[in-house]
Image 1 (cartoon, rainbow, N blue to C red):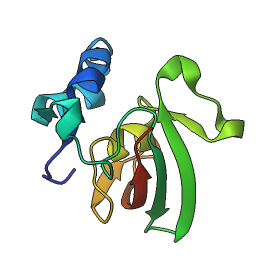
Image 2 (cartoon, rainbow, N blue to C red):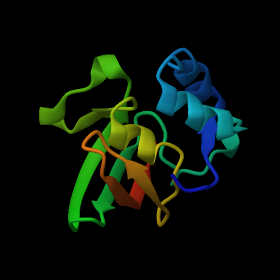
Image 3 (cartoon, rainbow, N blue to C red):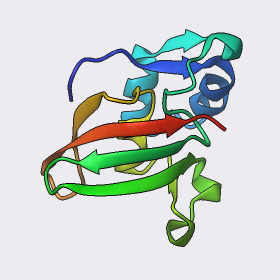
Length: 118
């Protein structure tokens, strides 16, 4: 993982904190800068954001919506914040990237192309 600023809105932090039994998410929230919702930039990935990202390891671009686990639906492009890609993208700003370990043991570099808040 790479050091980076991680911004989370106060409402998202409150909801996500209840999911912290999941180690990767807990680590991310520990580093988070919690921001009042009215001061949260619109181009930062949060819950229910519509995100376009590029997996720089293979050049594949995807557009997803970052959601809570119970709302996840791959066919609709709704990815859980607890999925490796969801946790990796959380708090990133458009233009930023992160190298993140995936379940196959291989790290992948993801770059946010755009993020649109709900």
